[in-house]
Image (cartoon, rainbow, N blue to C red; front, top):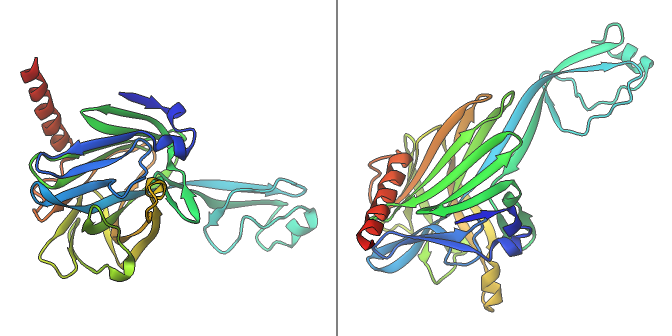
Length: 324
């Protein structure tokens, strides 16, 4: 199946189509084709604690943030009326947004000679692929979404300028485990920071969570976070194949809004725990594959997302062949 931009001219339209993966033991992964959670039952990992029952939301989603930066040499000459409209972060103390529009101003600048000024500046852009709502805010990651495919597993294709990001999601059959695999191709001339922030929960999939009643502790081991909810003997394990792992104690995502819950006449806002984030740096033109794996109780035996996806697709193909 293929869906293009005409299927999400608005968030309301984009959430009308949903996808679902299952793991064969009662757990599942589900969402909408624009990556927005629209129901309390949506999430990247809903684990079955006592297969095939006791389903708990474990990983609601991932907030995906991209920062692009480009170093430029800025020249301003006397009499120039050009005004910058982008935010610039400079090296040194000079502010490049300062308007110097006359020869007198140029002459008075202590570092200006012959009415020409040059400064090394960094132009920064920030982009969020994550699509969500709160009662007071909407994030439109679907604006960067070029296409959604579903053949065996869901696949999202994003574009920011000439930068491309492909996201694939796969559950591991027979395990409460999900892998999210990103293929990133950075654009030439710009450095990139790719930050993945997991939104964690631990509640029965029929209920909703509020941060005053949520208690989590997180320990860090290399690129793996081990999260203990509610002083329980359960463990939520998050690992990333690339980059740095940064913990953020006592951090929460507040008031995620689920529009379909409101339509049902129910409470439709929820909080999620943020244990930290994974940060990956890319040089201009670099290509990189990044895998984030979330598991309930079981240690991670691999962060090779490509092999996990190949394993699941092969399993599904074998089932289809038996039906022919």
